[in-house]
Amino acid sequence: MGLKWVKKPKKKIEYSKRIVAIVLSFCIVVTIFSMALMWVTKDTSPLAYLIPSVFAETGIVISFYLDKAKKENIAKGGKKHESELETEVNI
Image 1 (cartoon, rainbow, N blue to C red):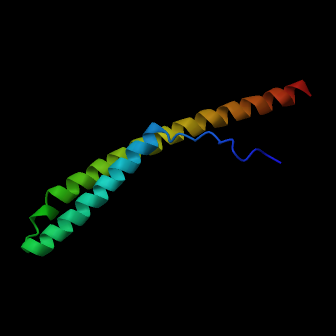
Image 2 (image 1 turned 90 degrees about the vertical axis):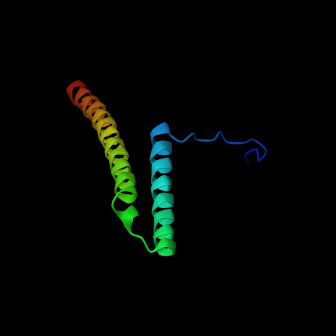
Image 3 (image 1 turned 135 degrees about the horizontal axis):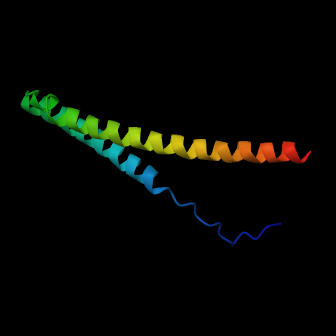
């Protein structure tokens, strides 16, 4: 039986995941704000400037994050294949 009063250490969220979450939440907030403002003022000019700039920023951040994750996974896969090759040679 484990000790119930012993707390497990918290897992820290990676910095890059925090950035992606912040940018996505900012994108959602700006989109909702723009839609509400367009509803009240009956003006669609934010569609031309504000919303595309926010979505461009979001796209750039997501593409950099995906590129980073791809490079990390390729590096992990390379190490895995090297260890498999070493075990095959040793047999």
